[in-house]
Image (cartoon, rainbow, N blue to C red; front, top):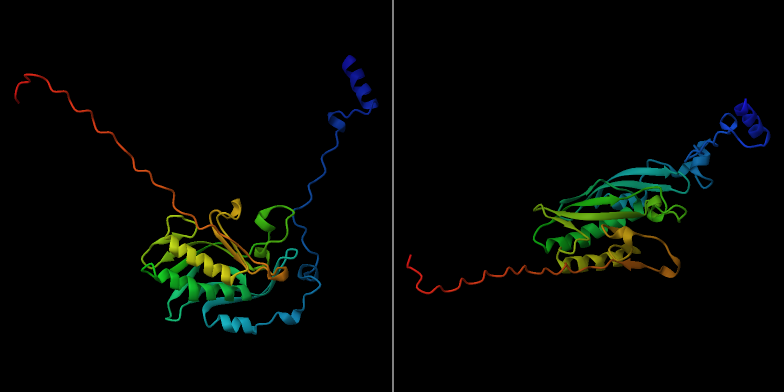
Length: 260
């Protein structure tokens, strides 16, 4: 009886008990699907822009690279864009291919700059190491996300197909040159950095922030007054300290020790 009285008092006092406790509100979906193609495409979408006819950029790019056209990527949000391509390989003037693995999805204008840099500058620098540039390991390309994946930050250039992250150059003799590895030839990394900073408006690597310690970020962000960012510390390898093992102490001379 006392238990029943207690329950009635709790209910009357407005204190929630197990049977009356409201269920939590359902969590909203992470992505609300658009109700129509027009909502996904955005107000600036013009269906006449989507055509199988290659753009001027496509025609130029096809002379120096192996690409697949992607006329337009739509959303979510402000992500995507027109005249996108999948960049499978870059063609050197002697016909050799520089494979990109995995093949990145990029805006054509950016793909053209990347292909030109790999073909005319990076490959030539690799030649000085005694083997030719055979492939490039891609760490990141088109991805709809905020900068550095920080919630609430501005849209990354990756979300526009205007950026790529590179990790490793693989040479024809099998050597894998991690671009942030301090043991790779210093002169090669110095010249690679200088050429990248001339070509792209943003170059981020070790020393830029904690997000870019293991790869090199390149993009063509358009900033006020032509401002450029070149933040890639070309570091020296760690000093190697030779291990010094002490010699054993000489045995003391024992007087009249018998011959052996």
